[in-house]
Figure (tube, rainbow, N blue to C red):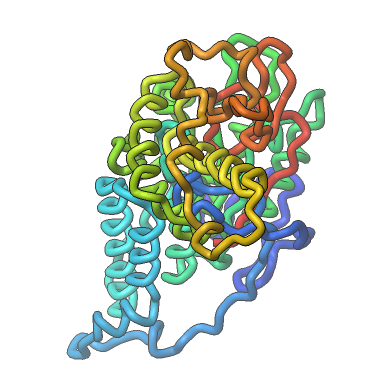
Length: 422
């Protein structure tokens, strides 16, 4: 393999010198932020954060100065200056539960901090491998953790840019000969210096189609993950069983992944806590009987198909807000108090189709319009269908609004790569 100063790169892949910004990368798009406080991929996260190529922060000489053998380093000051504790605390606030995941992230943060201190004493150590794989069901926080990881690596000096570029197969793989390499190359240019998050990465490889162009993308990724590992962190995400199959078919990819994090499903109690956080962030409150109704809703919904953890909670609360607004407007009241505008009542939740005694356990696709099945129910009073969750209708095959980590309905064609600023 070529030495560090003689690394080969994909043809036409222009690298950026340290401290610069990637050539040809433009900023654009609107920043929708991270609306579902850590719980909808954002967890728990909403898509749509814009390109934000932050200027590289000035280096503090006191944090990089080489130390003599007899000098001591102030660990508390190092932690404070790097913002490690603040980033980890924010992760705790944004995500309910996920103790094993948070523990692993803290371990990685500690390793990187200590590795940085060792370098100041000129102690020999190789740069830790940072490519990762996040597995788990939709709505379990994979994207939120990826965003915080990008910020953490940037603060500790392992990445030049505090940016996460989120893509799927359609952003990387072309539809005809000669189309794939330019698409993949452009995505890599945008992500260089930050984190590349590949959702549903197993779609890159289609064993049933020998002429599929995804293998070309995989080969380019393998080369860059090895040769540019000091300037790019790749995070693969998807369902665990499908990722296991993907790695079996692509052992070269598996060998480059240093950290495998499996995100567990949430318990009913954790989902209820997530719901409280979401409502609190939007200045809503639950009446006591409404909290009981939401707990019962979650128990019923968890037993039904296509349940999506925190994303299903978000969708249920979006419907409750619709019913709350409809109830107030239809009440005929001439005046409303601030409390009226904030309080979700039990009836705003109990009107869900999930509470129908004759509601089938298996909800047919024909009755759905979204990812989460019953939580995208037809409102019993108005019959209005909330189209915001946007899954593909199985009967018609029409592609909807593809959210990160939604239950797989196949790739969404024509979607632009998305860049998130952590």
